[in-house]
Image 1 (tube, one colour):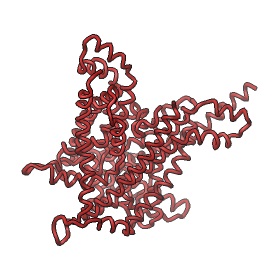
Image 2 (cartoon, one colour):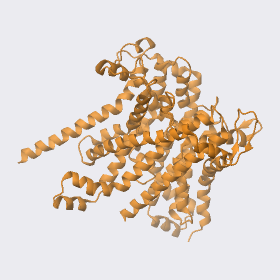
Image 3 (spheres, helix red, strand yellow):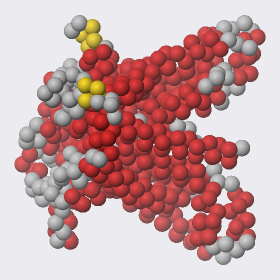
Length: 285
Length: 291
């Protein structure tokens, strides 16, 4: 009886592992193939497909890292993503604190409106934002078009609602009694924020900052249409490889691999919260 | 009681930014949609055209085709994702050593830039050195050419979407499965229901809010899809994978038909709002269920 139970258990694990190993291979294969291509020279590429990396052709990486325009794109991406993450997290903290601690008329409608912002197809906003950036927000020769500030503000449309949703659960979870006790002791709102809310919500803030950062880093469509030379980001650099005649696939794969690194570095911290953010807190774990 | 003024003071920066980059563009397309405005046309500038753009939109067969194509793409992708996601979520619902590791690997596609997803799939399917056409030809004698065959291009984008978004469905399903109440399941088993009956008559109704939310979110995502398809096929061959996002982009930028593009954007936004309203109702249903 006992042995059959253990045997059944082992059998159950076997299918579980079998399925998961297969699923992991399918997940990793396209990414692995991209790394393989990034390690090949032009000549090696057109041999029959070979999944084993025999020799690493570093030149693809060296060329892309030393390319001055790609360097600029990389710096732009880092500046835009970091500024956006900091801005979004700070604003979302204040907004969530207000939504969590006060009963505001119309708060539900504000929520619904933010969902719509987050889910609106970016293509819909392309035209109005392009016209606003080139014609309305313009002072003499300066315009919002092709500036980092433009992109930093723009990514708030998607990141701010997302961060408010993720942070809301965390701040609702901080007992209001803590606020009240501090208020009895004479602390003002600023003090409560600094001494109670920020320290307790810090993990949530880190998660929203990382996810916002990755979103800004990954974004392509707006970056491609609302910049031209100065503020281009790394994803537009990746796309430029294809439009130029005679794509250098090895270097393109190298750039694509480089864009993956930040996401992969943070994945184990944030993976539990991705779903919550993507479903607006509809689905929690 | 504390002052509401403080709360509005905290909310205002977020609301102002969302107003400028979210609401102003909306009213802008509402306004431009009533004008005939094409940067390449003979008469420069905006000319009031009333509802002409919308009349054109209703009879614009390519645009309607693009909407239907997007819907078809979404339906096939979502069906496959629901089946695979449900199966994988069931495996994750039980504990086994190494679960965490597989779960992290499974989440990777969600974190990859959509453009890079398109790039990886392009490298896989490109004629010449991509392994997919090579091995399909060698093992099955099957001619695969994403740049020439419309239905192959369509199905390749569906498979890419399944690769990209199945983890999302798995994780939402897992959240639903772990939140399932025990009693109805046990009760059904006591009453002698078989596994299929338990699945269909107990689990599916209980999971309905989660399934609905997932489907609505994925439908909205399908309307948002641009980057990865643009990188993989460029919307081609012909218009075989020119989904709504790509279609609007094409009207607005290379063709600079601003008035018409606005009308089109507004209609697409209307669909999004409709779906997100349905989503909101589904979430409300679920929240009520929790209480």
